[in-house]
Amino acid sequence: MKASPRSAPELEALTKIYYAAPDELAGFREIQEDDLPSIYHTLLAHHQHMTVTLEAHNGCPVEVDVLRSETTKTHYHRKVLLRRIGDQGVVLFGIVRINRGLLPAEVRTEIEAESTPLGTILINRNIYRNVRLLSFWEVEPRDELNGIFELDSPGPLYGRTALIYCDDVPVIELLEIVTAD
Image (cartoon, rainbow, N blue to C red; front, top):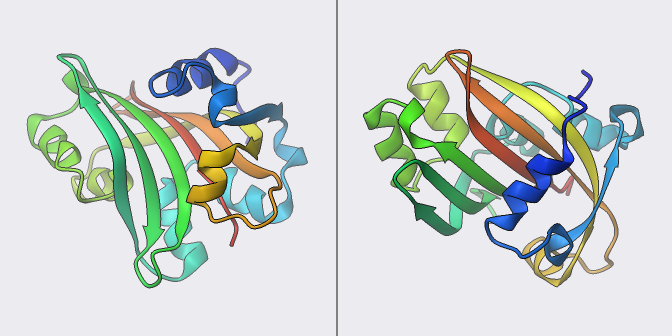
């Protein structure tokens, strides 16, 4: 599953929504799929929604925790966590940007209600979707991510940038950083 060679502009554009530069959030080093540690390869190198993958990996449902969001005339973006339902452990940090005009009104409304993970909404609404991987990242977390993931000993995390195509049109941009714990 090779990622697209276009990558850095998407990372920078997504992090710029909430940070002056990507390195405020973390140190990012683009890596190849083959460089992902085995467990992170399973969690990231696929064309599925992270909601489904993380629920399978953790053996329980996940819920969305929206840290911050904004809606403009054309876009909706949010900084989110996915948490395990059982113990509230954080399994994903993400930044999402959605082109609002390319989704049906009822889907936009449900997403902007901020109570259900994005992947769950798209699946439940039978929105035809295709996840296109852009890049894989080795992530050296800064203070905010260390706190979010409750990391005792800072070490690398891993993530991906991706686009979700809905009905063959790129609608959703993603930065997803996960932990294997």
